[in-house]
Image (cartoon, rainbow, N blue to C red; front, side, top):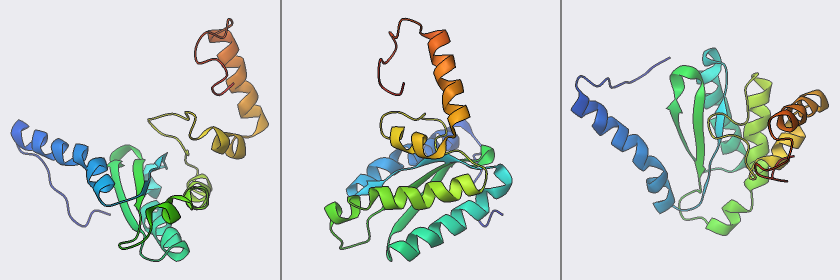
Length: 159
């Protein structure tokens, strides 16, 4: 459900909208600590995800600020969390794992992926081990071995 939307009517307007979108992470940095999520859910579950995930993190940490944006039309959501106003940045960042688990558990519950456009990387390596079943991990290892038999690409990073 869209409550409010802006559509670019020219290339200049489209560029202005992209500029706003590209400045979101920098603006969040100025606001203090942030915990970023690059997740995807089925498009039909996007509204439910944003509303319920926001409620769940707010229940865990009152005053947390949610900034959800991204490729909403394909279910890819940057679900970023910013520390509450006047709170301690280090104390907020110390809750990284708990907040990730709240968000990622709900993503999986909705049939989504904990990693959308940016991949697993080192930051989500532990999360991959938690959420992926052994069959999926075995398939990933098999593909890695087939594409990189000499282990030249990112040796030891994920597999």
